[in-house]
Image 1 (cartoon, helix red, strand yellow):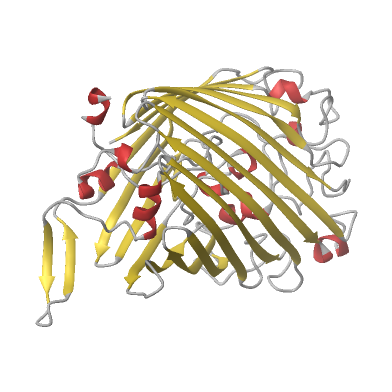
Image 2: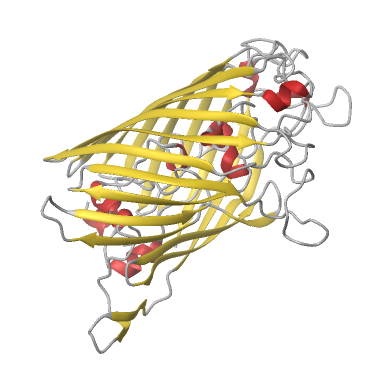
Amino acid sequence: MERLSQVAWTPAGALGVLLVGLLTASTASAVPSFARQTGLACQACHTVFPELTPFGRTFKLNAYTLANLPQVQGITPSKDYELLLNQVPALSLMFQTSYTRTSSALPDTTVSGAKSQDGQVLFPQQASLFYAGRIAPNLGSFIQMTYDSASGKFHWDNTELRFAKQIASSIGRLTLGATLNGNPTVQDPWNSTPAWQTPFDQRSSAALMPGASTQIDGPLAGRGAAGITGYLWWNDSVYAEVGVYRSAPQGFSNNGFAGPLDSSAGGVLSSGAPYWRIAYERQWSRNSWSVGAYGVVARITPPLLAVGSASDKFSDVALDSQYQFIGDEHIFSVQTTYIKETQSRDATFAHGGSSNPSDDLKTFRLGGSYYYQRFLGGALGYFSTMGSTDPALYAPVVSSFVPPLATSVVGFANGSPNSSGWIGELDYLPWQNVKIALQYTAYHKFNGASSNYDGNGRDASANNTLYLLGWFAF
């Protein structure tokens, strides 16, 4: 433990996205700029990064403003702070490199009968620059700009600006806050919701992913959703949050301007999407347990239609829970979530993009992890997505009403979105800001079937993936 605790680097942050949420293979972490601001080692706020401890959740909910080092200050005549800046800029870097191999190579995209390379080295898979920490009194940020190997470009990744203030109250400790963020659940302090979920927090960008997911589980972030939410946190136990999101796609231009959005933008929110979240956490001894619910209602104009001319309605309601035991040598945690999405596809159905005027989609994940001295450990998790059979929506040849997918082997031969499988991982952390992970994903079903899911003879098990990741933050 002593050799690990000598390496200080991070508190607060989080991480995330699994499976269908991996639109950009985005993985962020708690970042060293937080440690430089607080003077605390990462184990103060993390079990093993990115999973937050109770103290880490409090740090996040109080806007990343805790500081334990000299600050640049400005004080008004009434003795209020008008300036409070870190002497060291709140900058950090993250670098990921990886090796990915699937059970069966993908077909070549242009040469009939040929195979693509299997055994892909990405250097980097992803690299990120962060500004993460206090901006002003009661105001902090987690801002991530990422180079993504799949696109070969930089883009804005998981990002939020957060204001929080503790209020004197006769009923106990009360924190009121607000966030501006670019991904529903990126502001959430628990690791059981989609944006920072563990143990499904790191996935290869060089392997196929299932083609169907609920809106809150990645697609809204991929569509450039941006929103504002307000929250309260009472007695370190009760959490409530409400807000609204609108489309804010990056990289889109209309006659040289960043807007207004039109049919060429494709699949944007046609109105404000309300978001809500409630949770309860109990802490005792070295244990903590939380249970909660969250959801969003999104009206989305299908691609190629004029924005607002017609829309589909997606109503997502989810339950989640998390348990943690944090001992001196042993750490154990379990996270789970269940998401049910009710889809009213009036616009898509009217234009032939779906066989049904209404569908549903359900996602379930359950995973646990164990670590010895925050040095060696592993995780095991189960994931499942199930939904209505819809031959037009889930087709072998993807229609214009479905987000574009990589190749024909991501098609659906039997009109079903069902996918399921297991993910196992071994982790080695020689230092607190370095993780070496070996991961294996085994699919039982992929895009609706166990065998010949794409109609061209490819089985779900052909997408089983071996993934070796090196993750460095500094």
